Amino acid sequence: MPPDWPENTLMENTQDLHDRRIEDAWATLQAHSRTGVALEPRASRLAFADPEFMLRRETRGIRFQLELLKPDLDQQALGIENTVVVFGSARFRSEEESQAALLAAEATGDAAALARARTLLRNAHYFEQARAFGRLVTQHSAGKAPADMLFICTGGGPGIMQAANQGAHEAGGISVGLSIALPMEESANPFVTPALSFKFHYFALRKMHFMMRAKALVAFPGGFGTLDELFEVLTLVQTGKTKPVPIVLFGSEFWKRLVDFDFMVEEGTISPDDRKLFHYTDDPQEAWGLIRSFYGL
Image (cartoon, rainbow, N blue to C red; front, side):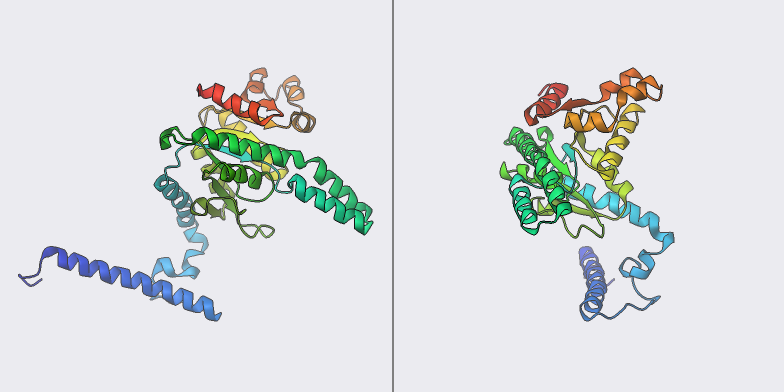
């Protein structure tokens, strides 16, 4: 380096070169994407900008790390430290949408469609209750320091997830969506805060992020995905792999009919104390009250 060059000049030039190389790499990828030209394997391509390399089986561990790191850093940047996670069916709709679906089904005269629409309308109250719960959590956090705030976090999809995100949005707050890349779900629901809308490829990393900041879990009626997430959390708390958190089963008739925990105790597959890991409720205010009581809020 010539003696009259300041030391930081070399660092700036090196950084500029680094930035240009990154920009060139991504420009190449974007150009191929826009024109529909397939990327050919090329040894000279930067490793991080080489899809063929990044998608190999051998680089799966790197992809795990990236899915762990990206949402964590972005949430840190926006002060998301504590969340209330809401699970539930992606199939439920608002009362307004459900009523419209019933009218449409009645017009067709299709018995199967009519039965589905009636079921949808019967379950629409869960959508409205999840929406109300999202508002309650968000209203509590208004004006508080980030460390004292609780943010709604959902799977980012439609149904109950959308309802909770919508409630947070209506209360003037932000909320998190941890969506998963699935054939039947193209994008996150419109009420997730855009800067907190994350998409995952790996279910395992997504579930890890649900628990990393969770201060409570509220499970509304749902299908396989809801059951998977609920029982994973119950197992983690039961085995001491994570700290105890309030676990609320919203919709007591649904959950008691679906899972007979008393029978599991009778058969010795769980202990009587395991029933203390969760609470039933049918009221958004009571669900929020259980969480407030647990933390003395």
